[in-house]
Image (cartoon, rainbow, N blue to C red):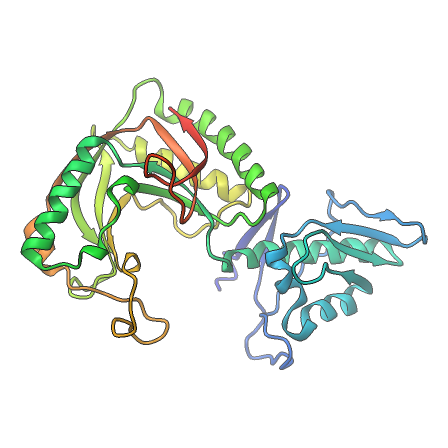
Length: 339
């Protein structure tokens, strides 16, 4: 990790720096998580109160899917937090929802434990598979028809497995992914999504509707003979940077709100056409554990590198749930912003 550019974690409007300790120092065998340098500055949003027993108490709202990170292996993280902050941390049982309750003799101790849990959970949530994503559908009739033509030609002339291809009803440009683990997080994401789209569409797009051009093939890795994702390039038809700026601004807003992880400086403008994850691998298809399947894309690139899929009007942006399908064949969207 670059100590001059540490990872930033946003929690409730506050931004924390995360620093890893020197890897040369051993950690207890029972504790599997990397050390974190905690920021114990009192949290201005802290809700520490006195309970009926006269002890200080705070509740931390944490999705149940993230309890495991606060508990740690064999309870090591929970024990570590309790020992270092002189508090008692109570976590709902397996299969139960609810807040994590922190109690202690000092308000500062409870606040410190609260801060540490919030930082820990904010960082660990990105280890969970993403559940939702913000996207621009690339499903105009022209693009869908062109994609079907490309699909047939690629299968017939390049002997590609039909299972590799995207569903034409689900062609899209992903702006960012989100990990939303309960209903309250979904509602918070919807509110943030509405707010940023309304503002940014006015500031960046203006009154003229953009036309998105979908043309040309590229692949994700370095070897065209071993590709796991083949995609179509996506640009503003008029050659401006509005589409890129708009996508980058949306992603930045969601990262600032702690709803998305900051992975790249710019959004990769692309629409996935083929992906090895679309193919349900049987036992004879599987590679070594942990490795993605690949296919040889050299021939399809040679024949269709400049294939023109047509245009799509930028008329809506969707906040959708992963692995879902709605009535029109696209992903089920928890919110749609019309532009």
